Length: 353
Ligand code: NAD
Ligand code: TYD
Image (tube, rainbow, N blue to C red; front, side, top):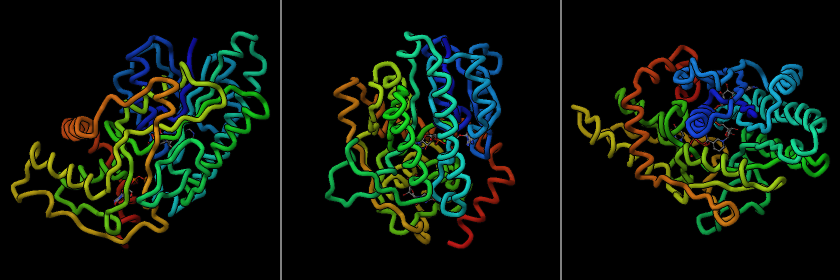
């Protein structure tokens, strides 16, 4: 028995692979293209581990996926691979359409061919789990109830539109072909190995480097934040107990405006890595808002709790402290990411704000 994970060198995917092999001996075949966001350093601890097979490749490559399925005969696929950054999708949406839509389509078609040829027992036990986002539901007003699985889709960014399209493909492959799929729509993750273009690691890194902390607009945009290993445990729970064809919203019951997140990080950094120049709060800078910026996301995660018994283990206080401590202890990981390519992105996104 084995599973195939796509995008397992990225932020959530690498946490998932590490957690999976911590909890079980079932081998993982990890298919990742290693875009700017993929980092094999995240998986350093698995270098000589025979349970982990890394394959560099593209989810749009049908021949490669067919070959992996035939060779490894997985009992499940967990699909993380995606272009994942909203700001990048605004600057250049093409890669998002290709990987998130065409890539998911290619994976579904290859999986369908493989699954249809399985023996009855293996066919019934097989799962395709699609990892998606709460952003497909669009934006909420302050008084609106949280997103439930029954909410209509209303994606607003090229990123969320491409993820919404992929969710629809996964749904259709179940309804039309009977492929045993599950989907999770999760809120914003944070924790170890988070690529430093995203809010939380960017703020930690900039503060430590004495650079400004760029708050888009008024900083009152609300997100729900979930510690990454809790997302991983939710996916493991869905794989084990989820019903084919079902969607599960996953969240941390922790809605916070961005500015409060930044103040929390400043409080922790002032305590754990104080600067001679005084509180990091001096670095806060309000910059031009993101075009089409969604005002609020919030997740109603009662279905996964009620039906599958999953709840997050971390509170925001415990998770964010662990995260700051991890970044302070892994400055070399951060340093290795700050290559020319990352610097180019920083110039493109922030120079004109
Ligand atoms: P990430 O950008 O850190 O990692 C994506 C990984 O996919 C990288 O390793 C990259 O190399 C790989 N990849 C990209 N294109 C590929 C291709 N064509 N073929 C093979 N591999 C490819 O993303 P993440 O934050 O870890 O997100 C993982 C998944 O979870 C995504 O599907 C994302 O939409 C979803 N998600 C993320 C969040 C979040 O807060 N980060 C929240 C909810 C859902
Ligand atoms: P991000 O981490 O990009 O995740 P997403 O857009 O998928 O929610 O951003 C989280 C929030 O932080 C979002 O409202 C945009 C905001 N933000 C800033 O204010 N400044 C920044 O430099 C970045 C990267 C994000």
